[in-house]
Amino acid sequence: MERIYTPEVAHHVGERVRVAGSLHTLRRLGGINFLVLRDARGTVQVVVDTAEALASLESLLPETVLAVEGLVVAEPQAPGGIEIRAPRFEILSPVRAALPFSLNKPALKASLPVFLDHAVVGLRHVQRRGLFRLSAGIMAGFRATLDGLGFTEIQTPKLVASATESGANVFAVDYFGQRAYLAQSPQFYKQIMVGVFERVYEVGPVFRAEPHDTVRHINEYVSLDAEFGFIRDHRDVMAVASAVMRGILAYLQAHYAAELETLGVTALPVAPAEFPAIYFPDAQELILQRWGEDCRGEPDLAPQHERWLGEWARTEFGSDFLFVTGYPMGKRPFYTHPNPADPAYSNSFDLLFRGTELVTGGQRLHLYQDYLDALARQGVTDLKPFETYLEAFKFGMPPHGGFAIGLERFVMQLLGLDNIRLGTLFPRDLSRLAP
RNA sequence: GGGGACGUAGUGUAGUGGUUAACAUGUCGGCCUGUCAAGCCGAAGAUCGCGGGUUCGAACCCCGUCGUCCCCGCCA
Image 1: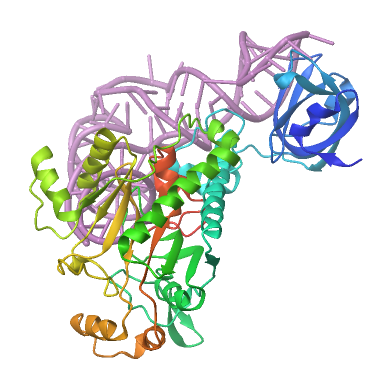
Image 2: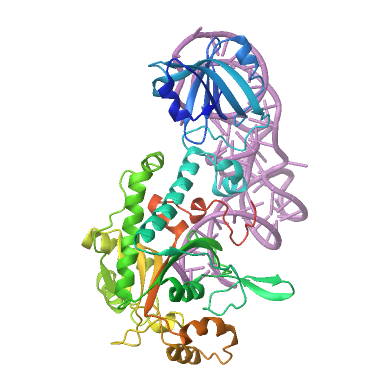
């Protein structure tokens, strides 16, 4: 008999069906017992009321993998109004060891380190599983939105020869006796590919060797990158970035309602047709006026400043999103395009989502000579590591720009997680390289 | 890299100097024919992270050490 998924069982009342999955829970009441079987899509109750059937489950613990054949019966007392009776069990993979923590309770009760140590089974919990389904939905929504805008998906190398993009620390690896690095971003390659496809995006891992230890940093994360040509300036990039955010949220609403419900998300973030934006120096002025902290002249915003600005966007514009534009040039990588009217500031932006930096982007330089000048200003004398990168500009690149979204941070802010590690399948941090 | 807090059964917690370290959950055994966080009865399970010190006496106080978490810097 062909196996069906648990949500389909309801369509087979009066028939015998075969379902397969994990033993979620077995409630033994004596003469009647209820086994709940969990598969990838849901759960179904199986009534076990004969000694033989019960004996076939003897000494099996939760997470035992089994197949069940039985008769589907409509029963008002059953969860979902449906249950399987007169079952025959086929044990596919018996479990006789107790789990480190219960997976069959509504809320998973394990501390963060315990959960992470046992993530291989902990991820099976319905809520954790739903969270990572949602994460898949964010990637799918990102792709769907950009596909609709004429972008081409690319995959660029994660093993790279030079680690010269910015100040961020990189992981060095041995590459057949040569020094190589794990890519800290696809920046160079995605720009190069604008010369090929004009509009590109990439979903892939990036590696940061920063020894930071906070609730919103990990050392390997998934970056949702986009880059495209023939822009006027960074405002065109912001328009696409906000369209992507709205596109992702709409995609979740359309295709991931069940996961959102499982995770208790009753309302999606407020993403207005046009996201509010504030110019970097104006943001600092606002912080002084509203919260009395003078950070004018500082090259960057501190996390507290971002939280304040997030509140402000919420109360002032009813938006969960806020662009901060024009970060000082000194704080941005060399490929950043300056503001022609105010060259100390850049044509770049951050997008704050509920008061945390979620997206960084901007207009890039596109003229060959500008790159040579920018690198010289950075004190770079050896252009050799930049050779392949610069070659693209030598042979003509359109005005372009792009942005990158941190996937796990998006999940974290969307679901109000306390720690980004909860939004990462197998997080890599200062002390965690396994599982 | 700088600062702060916390380490107690498998798991989550209580216990702030005094016999046998408590509760919930999980596990094991028993009862139970409508459970859905099942219920009731019983059992096992902790050298209180590790090492040293103070004390008649330490889970508790002190020092060291290891581990974990949080904040800042930095970033997505």
